[in-house]
Length: 53
Image 1: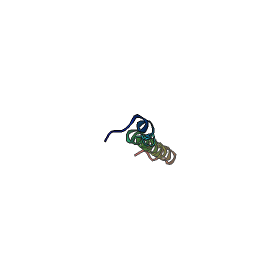
Image 2: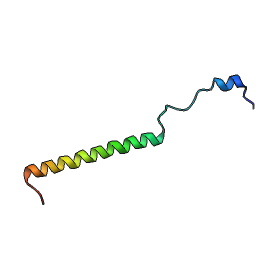
Image 3: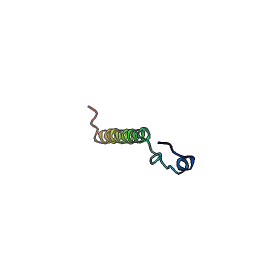
Image 4: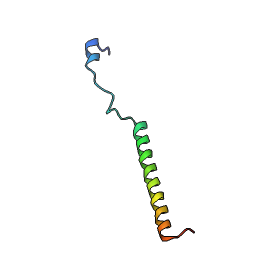
């Protein structure tokens, strides 16, 4: 099966522009920020309650 040049020019593809690698990086970044906020909140809470042990 041979495809003509005109047919090749009409092919549209490539997905949505967001690859699996980019999506994985975004998810890891969000998880990191969540863990950072969680540990920071825990530290502030322990300092307020003077519970250092």
